[in-house]
Length: 203
Length: 203
DNA sequence: TCGTAGCTTTACCAATTGGTCAAAAAGTGG
DNA sequence: CCACTTTTTGACCAATTGGTAAAGCTACGA
Image (cartoon, rainbow over the protein chains, first blue to last red):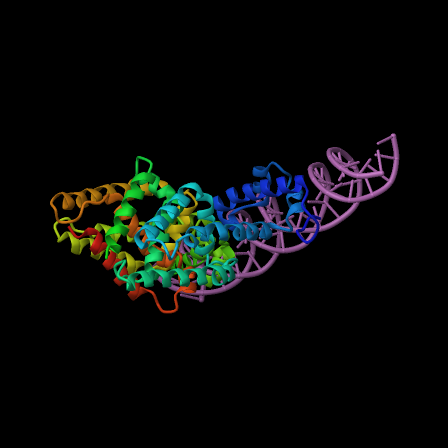
């Protein structure tokens, strides 16, 4: 069994594992953890169910693998926010990167949202270990910028929450957005958010 | 069978139906539609599973009933936004009412979020029939306010989206918020959002 | 008190679903 | 071509789950 414990993965293992993970991302993000079935994942991957279980020990391991892979991608835009850059530029840049992610990786956004929505049963440790330190560090950076008079004084924690909420909204609530809007929202959303955070943070 | 088709519901019917709906709200909002089981709902309601099915024709009907009941509650804060009131007061009031709802009705918020997240399979008609006209009407009101110079010019549609996103975030992503914050977030969130929308909308 | 309509439960199904197993098939190095 | 490893599959399970049937219980008006 190719359980990551030993050896190097063969070419075919790489291919099939990523086929499975991509299919699982489709299915989990569309139906949630309980709503997804191994048969659906197998169909989407073009493999048989027992073959799926040859590469992953079970449904849960597939889900956990996806969540783990997602974590770095997810934190990346925040990591890139540079304490030594221009505060307004850095923050507005962060907003745009998050908005781009909502457009380019909607499945990942919904997978994450579904997990958090249900109390983050498989991600609380990750949130504490990875997200929380980064969050605190970047909040401190923002606070420094404000103390230096480069940005208006607001609560950095809620500022970050509002950035997450407003950007991810376009992926997570896409079905609602599409009912209410006729045109593609990315461009107008980008302009709105730029305007909103510019006016909020102007010192 | 007490399928709403005839007669008046008895005292015991009223009690049990609301017991069931309250239990179902707990279970559906915590685990999603597929993740919830009739046994869980029955346990939470203190009734037997067949007894649940005496009052509702099936799992789906319970879910749909909850969604229908939710719709009016959900739209209410937006309905209350008065075109003849003071624009800034009305909009900031709307933000606070939505934030209060996220605190006071987190189960409802999560039920709604879960439904939208999965493509709103049982709510798209409602969104089109109820939400969309109201959304368009209120966007027009906001646009009028802006044209009169009472508010800064922003895209009303994205303004409303941002209000939904930032307020519901505290209910839907509660587990994440609680990891990142030590204190209770409602008061500080209220101040932050008031500040954000005040600065954005000041003419 | 009795009959009846409304309510509840026990016992049960059929379908779905996550997962197993042994055997077949397909690569792969010599 | 052969032995051996890796990959794939068909057949099968046990548990869960939404739902049913029919009998039993309860409230309540006559």
